[in-house]
Length: 298
Image 1 (tube, rainbow, N blue to C red):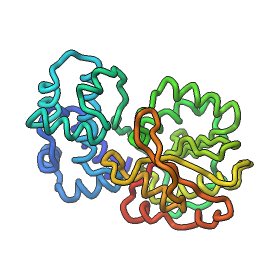
Image 2 (image 1 turned 90 degrees about the horizontal axis):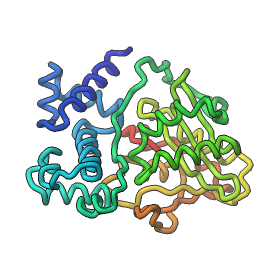
Image 3 (image 1 turned 90 degrees about the vertical axis):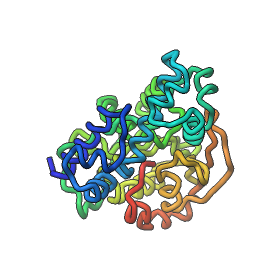
């Protein structure tokens, strides 16, 4: 296991063990006896999120869980999540979940904003890897555990995802040869579910450790070469300015997709993007977001 991955795992372990305590870069770096500047760069490069962003999203997820599965007062949950007041917690929660904590509690439907990152401790050396498209294969039922592990890593890109319902749909996609997977040994590093009649990409995720390697571009090109009967490929993602978006919208745009209509899916505001099949060459663009910031999930 490389030193960087080992250190990032140590950061994640520390955050998960101290979610209800003060969490900032300086505190974590001091606890792990590491330079905070190097720790920040290393963590961000590996997982695509800053330590502060990861910790905040994890805390809000645990707060959402308490709202649904406990009777604790909202103020107590807010303080446990590290907020100084119920109002500041409400503002932050609404920005991410698109509803106030009391409304979320009344609806009694928990879904995570961010699950714990579990990294591949022994990734292959993928520097300069090419030919991803040839390595993408149709998923089988034996791939479901690896597929779902990756879903948990990229859950931030799919608001309101119900894991039970998703798993049933995944089995259907696999039976109908609509599920594609790219693996590094036993680890799923890229997954895509599509519909050949509508041309819709219903799910596209890339493992955080494998960004900046053109995997999303390879899946995009693969979709354009599949027997899709629609004249365009479509995908939905966050609307512009959504604070819950960790880079999905920019990734979709960098692949050549154009903005289309605004939607509301499962009560969450989204936007459809379209890639016309005659413009397949736009998929050959280098993923600017991947190259510069490494933020890619969808």
